[in-house]
Length: 97
Image (tube, rainbow, N blue to C red; front, top):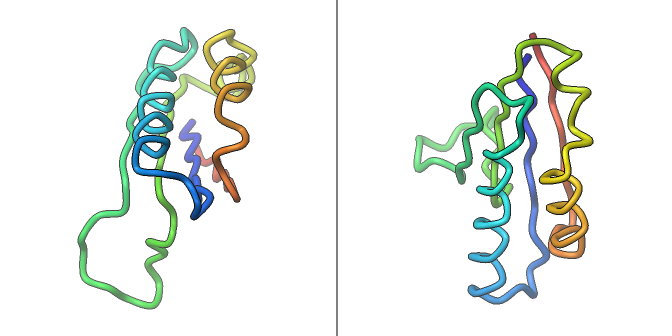
């Protein structure tokens, strides 16, 4: 299962706050049910109408299955939400398998 999360940060955040957010997302690599965690930002690929690069931070979590993804009540995940929920203006999730 691929759990793809895209964050649009609030425009008023400082560079330091944006860096803190990125470090916060990186802590999600410690979630036990995640087989792999990838953190990134929009790539400098060719602009095309079908490519949305308006987000600030991307998080891709690879899980064994839907059951493993549902285990995201992990304390690391809950702490991330509590510490950084005021940083984003929008979050969008796409799950696929």
